Length: 403
Image 1 (cartoon, rainbow, N blue to C red):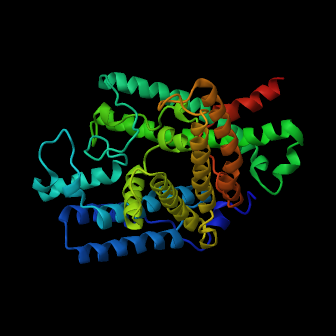
Image 2: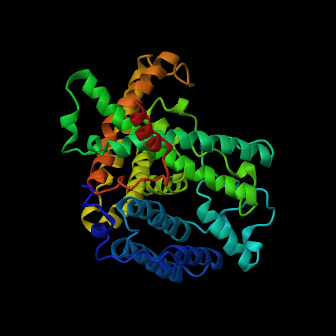
Image 3: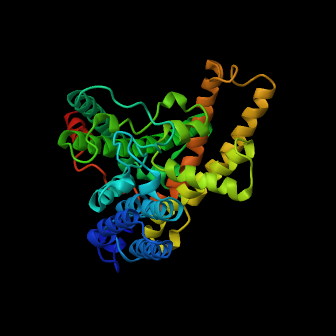
């Protein structure tokens, strides 16, 4: 497996991705298109060129290894696809959005300012500080810049220590994540189940921590340098409280990051209106849930495409399954509420029900996690070490020799 995913063999036939041409320039072009507010025909034409460029970049170029390719395809090119459809096809950002601390509408600002604000809107994924800020964002930080940086530094050091240990396990136990050979290492019965689910939980924690670390570093850089959004209150925590994750719906909607919610909300409302479904109904809620997971799947499928055309669509299964399980979950909760086993009034469910909910969420994600990561490991994703240096893996040989 390691030989098949080696940089030389994996990247054969595809040149390195030109970041200026396919990452930076399209971003600037999209911001200019938003700021110039050209006629619809021009906007559609340019946006189709940008979409084609993103798809071409995924197929024709490489970052050199599967992990970086999947990350680039899903986070950069996947976001580009969703940003184009939202900001060019569905909204007029200069007209529809405004920053609450700035009394001057974007439509009245000079062209260069509109381009700058358009770039900010593109990368302000939760639209923090605007009239369109997404729901369930954690409360803003209240304190000085120094206090903010100190708090983030503590989070950085703790997260680095944990991610080092977690990555050390994953990268020294790849065999436990290979679906064709992993069953050989897990015994039958309850102990084997705990081992399998524990491996899944470790991989999910690693993914969570890598996202968190990226955000911590970005927020510290912005606040320390005063560049861009340099106000501490503009950088609330990326994730919501995990105490809210007592249902699958809550885990995705309240605890997990909100970076795609601006797309989910707009497309979900559009889908409900197109189908003529009354707002506020159970059916309306389900349509919006499945629309959200379809968009999330589309974004990750751009990562599939960058791994190879034969992989396109493989991420879809995991996200479709989560949409379906939320529908089942909502149905069970509605029935439980009818017979008096659900929430206490209209508030949070009681402690006992929440504990059952946490167990249910754990079981589901330890089951569904392999739907997402098993084929990724088969494709070589995860073999590249995300940390340039690992204290844990450096100390283990020393300790073994000393004993």
